[in-house]
Image (cartoon, rainbow, N blue to C red; front, side):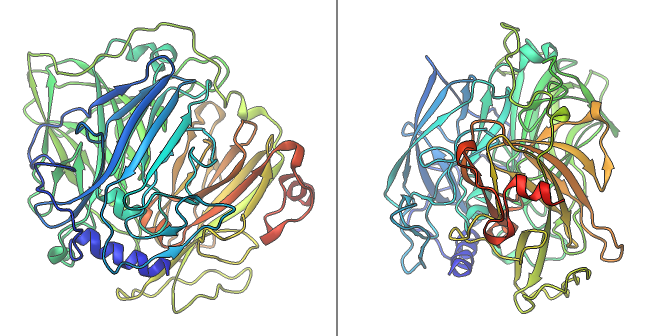
Length: 573
């Protein structure tokens, strides 16, 4: 049934099955700017007295090229607001699904009386919200995505508690309904969350104009998706479209020679981006101060950030980077923000180089909100000194995919075959704990991994396919320890919630991999998920459930599906 819903949703996003509610691209819900427009900052909402209270309506509309759009919008018309909060604040959201029911659409029961959160039955118009990267509870009415369903005409209340030790930085929110998550995010239903205070950890950003950029992807109109030169997805910058085949860039206006603090989220469903700022053909230095909401270099106990200088930034779908840029001086003739061509593998998407925006300079200051000056000593962060703590378990997981016609995995110890290049075949996607059977995600599945609060685990995630995958962990960040078995020097280790695992060449005996350290010492307990954040892959089954038991209730010994408790697995090594 889930595959039927996915197929129906793909027709919906292509504009073949049009929703009952339609609007022009430039007016009404889900309004979009024209190609070649200036990139304007998203509207800001701020917490007060420890709370941010907001009502969001979930809408759909049809764009002027026939593609289906989705958005979150306040009752007074603010679309995709940036939610600005402080550590320790609470975000209260009243979410109402204004998307009309699709006549004749399939439906699927995903919950029962004991685990439902909202509705029990999923349809292609169901929605919810995932608060990506925020280290908050996976309980119902918080950041729970396994069973939370808000159907057409229904209202649901969220209460998201931002931990007091949450790292300051850029996070984001988007729908996370398995089977239609890609369609909703391609449609544009996403916005930024900023946890304030990075200037206290990295004073270099204090007082700088702040530019928030959400880079999204969107489907191409149905009639041109089969053209050989077309990318798999169009892209946009704060909703300004950069579309096939003219690829008209957006416009970014900066003050000549000034510095700005850019906070960039790759809010795409499927598109990997390799960002570069190029002046007269020369890549510019990007002074990175944060990845995935965590200030770089801030987790060694000193609570002071470190600037990392890069000439380009490979950002996976859902990844974020925060960096300082220098505007062009008066002598620069052409300045642009680009995404370079990304080789995502023989089975991967076509991701060509594109100019996202042209930089226009003038003597006038940009109309951007300025960062505050440092106001307090940096607060303690949840991940401090994770490099030095005792590890309680080691696990191996792998990404794998097969055609539906070839479901059986190869015998243990044998290389996984490369799927044949059959464009008409449908794929099944898996993220599997080594030693378990491949299993597509289902909300009724038992946890693939069971651990307990207080555990610290090292996971190695292999890619046994010929296309890139992007590992994402809900509820907690992880420390990157090694890439393809090569250790990351201790003084260069960073924290992420999403990280790429490069494709396998189909020949070598060693699979590409990352090794990461998971920290379950925080307050988070319950069931949540991990998956590939190429959302077409997640919708196709590449997701699984982890259960973190409270420490006092942790069970020892082997549990269902070979997951085991962390102590039992470690002891067996």
